[in-house]
Image (cartoon, rainbow, N blue to C red; front, side, top):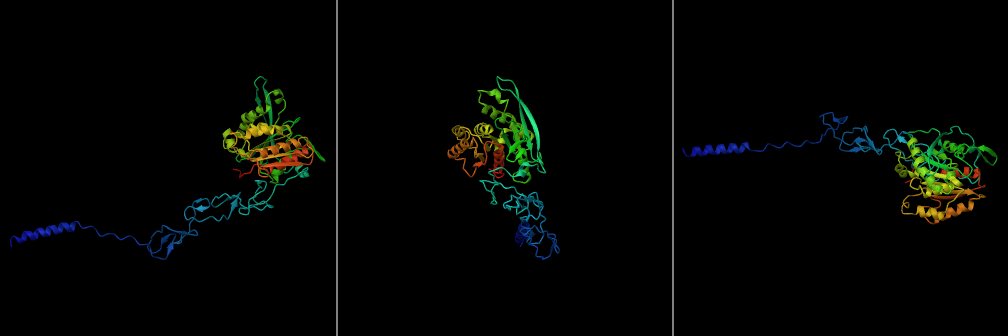
Length: 415
């Protein structure tokens, strides 16, 4: 008996130790709240807060809470995923979610976006707008209203700079700068540099009084004013400069190289630094990145310089060219634009035109045909256009053709 008692005590001690090491009973996982009544995402019976695992049409599928859409991205609520129905737009931007309307469809006559209602200016990519409209093209003198002052004219500023040609005296270059009505330094504007012809100066395209049939003393500036006011084109900045006197000192020198240098070294840097262009910063690299919004054009002598100092020698900075009643050696132009250094630069617009009885008519046609034939980057009817207007080497032709050409330039959707 004495031997049995110690054994029983040992068994009891070991049993107690084993009981002390038993794992606690697992806590059951919480079950979803079964209650049917919720208020503001909280169960009115047990106080459970709904974590809104799924949404449907902007409401929680569990508790019915309505999403207040605190944040949007690309027109979708980042909380519930609801797509904004854009009930209210201002200047093409939804006042609810901030989505910017891309105006996918607009009425060709009213020129209003059928989605947001904003006025839309036709963009004639490939000679036709996405809505089906085609440019308003004239082949004779423009209607009278384009030669009359409109209600909202643009303004003109002047600028001059000093330059010195090695071996010659320093000279002053004069420029005029047309700013469209309502010009806003906080916006972005296309930029067109226009060159005059023999006998003219920087005033020719803007303020000099010209004769057109049945009208005397007309200024081409009124055409720009009217086109912008009637929303035929987007507002554009236009720069004109005088080629005379300064270039008279270049007899025997390659003057197209001089002008090309001045455009790069003076005109473009000044314009992108002091005016609101599409260049993101005041550098030539920024101009190159936005060259679809920069154009060079001219008439007669100025047309030659457009080919030579622009298409040949400044293709990285200009994507649009308007050549009226003038030409250049097409083989020379092709040797530049097809060169390895320039082959990757697209030409967004090449517009060539002249009068039916123009002394430069035939040369302009040959120039155009050769360029279109021998470079894949120019396709007639897509980015290359040849046109003629009734008349000779005169301002009724050039004023009409600048009207026609501007409708084809500066498309916002260009890539």
